[in-house]
Image (cartoon, rainbow, N blue to C red; front, side, top):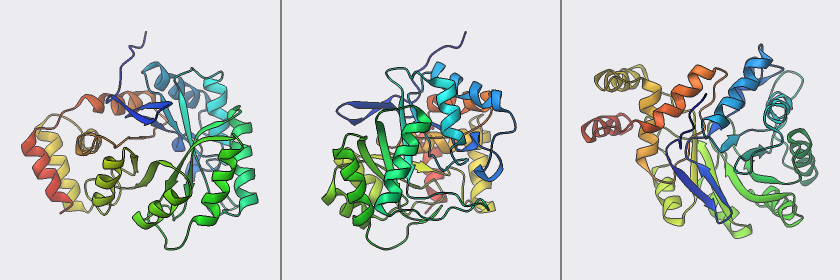
Length: 289
């Protein structure tokens, strides 16, 4: 029998919504390039069920994963959902026939995406919807007022509980906050890519969650070697060290590591219990300096 744990503690995303700081990112449940069905459907279902058995209460997804495939697998594996399980999704893009990720941020497009998330997940209301603004790795300049206002209207209709933003600048976060409360920001950030340091601190002071993706993305060979050396000294793995650094860096950071393997999932969750010594944190901090 799987032993439940409380991975990395919890974070109150809102008065009515508390998440485990280590969640599960479902992107890898789809096929290659996040397109089409997985090679092993039963394994995908097993990973989701194991995440819940381990105590994870935060599932990150998007209906454009697949497209639709990931949400359909989540529904098959976990519906009816446990009361404490919360699903966070993203809108603002779709998939084309070639597997591309074109933007889709007009109000009617966003309404359709919200409706598809509801349908494929089997929900009457979405816990959190993030508006994806930039590309896969970097924000793009410009106003988000029109699409974020459209989501705020869907929130007022009762289709969405809480709103967040993804791949955004600090200025875009502030613009969104003028329109409606923002409960989380999801950006590319890790030990080697520290461009959001000030934003992380600002959000922490406001009680807003920061959800980094690609914890091992964008490392140079030298940076990777330094992190591997730290992992070797403490008897761990680079992936575990990267996740532990994020959890220790700021209390508002929530993780959404993804995998299609039950064994790897257990490793990711176990990383939440890793405490990095102060001298190794100093070494890791120098990587992104």
